[in-house]
Image 1 (cartoon, protein in one colour):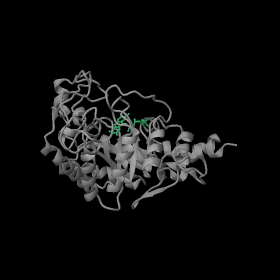
Image 2 (cartoon, protein in one colour):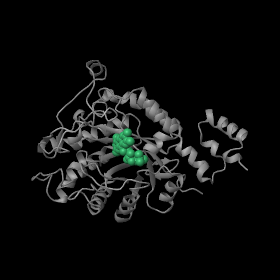
Image 3 (cartoon, protein in one colour):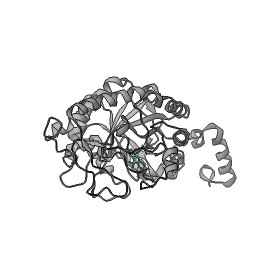
Image 4 (tube, protein in one colour):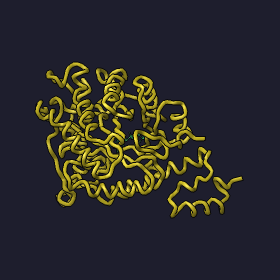
Length: 381
Ligand SMILES: Cc1cc2nc3c(=O)[nH]c(=O)nc-3n(C[C@H](O)[C@H](O)[C@H](O)COP(=O)(O)O)c2cc1C
């Protein structure tokens, strides 16, 4: 019997299996508001059988968006289109989640699929183009050069602005609740604002928000505390971390275990163990390249983890759960390649009486008929 396809309950929320759609920026919003693209995109993964579908990094303030095309939850007008998405995702049996974040000094970059700011005047007008000066713990640029994606020199946040940030995250969490989300992932990874506070590479502050590890953890922990306070007890709270910055002098596994223990004490339920996000990060990228981090954090801090990173092979993903490295498997690009990945996992991993029963009822019978005619999958041999 597949462990990957077993349900799991976290607080009061049950996922039908251990697969999660990893948050992925769509660069398709105007003024942070979701539209038909976001609906259709989330829908296909809910219909494809994922246990949870987590929407992209969503800015808790306008300047916290990665690009002008990213989602936001800083005002009430942004709630209704998301509510339409959560309703359908739930109808199709998946748990709707959203990643809340702030991009810090990596904000206001070009839409990544374009790679450069080459919008015509017409496109700028039609797509609500915006550019702004990012903010960060210290006035240090992400990279030595702006590069084609347009990294900018940030302005150093004042202590007063830092103290306001947990409140911005909490307000966004309250809007997420009103929009019907059942899971929040706090974005503390990939060199974005909270990771910028955690890492000595980007945090050169000399006040209570910088210096010692305790001081560098202060803002991420304050954010987690503020969100946990407003996020109902029966709903899960995840955090995504870069377990290692993979740059000399950056965050290490030991730092991440210390952070995770503190997050756990606040009531964070699960850590998604990613890595990198700083200029010059060096690590080998291949099959399951970050699973070791999920295991290290799970064992080191005694907390549930999600593994992420090139886990599209069904048997490798199964092994991640079966071997106890992680409790969930998050899929990004393999899900783009095959939005029905969890449905197909039923066939590949077996152990299920009627794999077609998991398909949307409107379509599962037709796929069964096709396989019967072709003597394929469950009808083979
Ligand atoms: C187009 C794209 C957009 C992404 N956007 C986000 C994001 O909004 N938040 C995040 O934490 N990770 C983001 N990621 C990283 C993925 O969630 C995932 O961690 C990474 O791609 C590795 O997993 P994979 O090999 O399954 O794709 C993005 C990745 C891609 C390909």
